[in-house]
Image 1 (cartoon, rainbow, N blue to C red):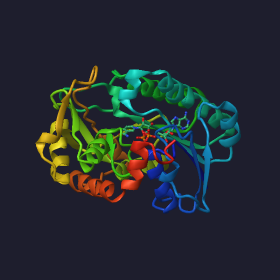
Image 2 (cartoon, rainbow, N blue to C red):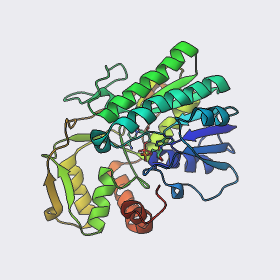
Image 3 (cartoon, rainbow, N blue to C red):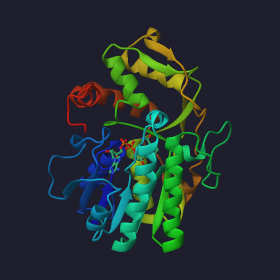
Image 4 (spheres, rainbow, N blue to C red):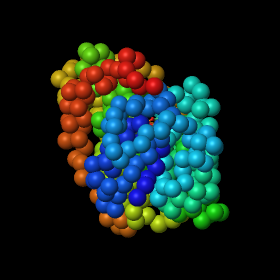
Length: 327
Ligand code: NAD
């Protein structure tokens, strides 16, 4: 078996590859893994084993048509993580978001089609639904993305769906909530706050801190993707959630507690433009149809994540302060 993972040096893609190489996923034991990544500022080669007899790392761009045509054929499946992923950056400049997320997905799927790849999972986000004050989104919810990041992901979702509907590509889409865990870039809120606190610095809390996010451990997310890869139906969308809704204020308090810091470390900063108030996923479809259940309790997972950052300063200092091989 051969599997191509795009965005494989990023936070979630690298977790998925490490688990594949550890034979954690039924049906993919012993699989040859091609890890494709452009190594943007967000990609880090050190997130993957330096060498492994079942791993081939390719530095390349999903928008590179010739490379995709050369690389994709011969794989049994593609799991597509590669994306520009940080909302704040998309507010400053959205061009790369639409190029990689929309055109990159289309370029990759053209190569999938030409190369006759049998199975594809497109990794999307709950942010395509917008913001919800009450209740939770099912997969039927209309798309109403608010940030350029979310709009580019919604665009890529629709490109992916069209390759199933028009060309019959055996493709499923996953939409997950906010991930946390080891190896997440310190621009994202949990590693940013944890590493700032470990350095004795303050934490910038947006607005009034009332924004609610649903937290999902990266291991649970990748378990869900594996279920969808093996058992998901073509053309179907599967929400993957963690079931843990926390306001940013409450999350910050937890992180202060776990790092032994006081509330004086909180620095209120002006709110993000068009900041979505609340995300909440209805994940009953993947639970009922594919038997998914998150396994990691949020408070335990968060404590373990803080410990990981405490124990791995070389990793995050290199990424955060530009002294490593992050790009
Ligand atoms: P990340 O930013 O850590 O990783 C993205 C990876 O893609 C990086 O390694 C980067 O180098 C690579 N990449 C970027 N542009 C590329 C290109 N043109 N060609 C090839 N590689 C390229 O992001 P992540 O948090 O691991 O997210 C992975 C996927 O999951 C993304 O599609 C994201 O939208 C989605 N997602 C993430 C979250 C989350 O909480 N992190 C939540 C929902 C959905």
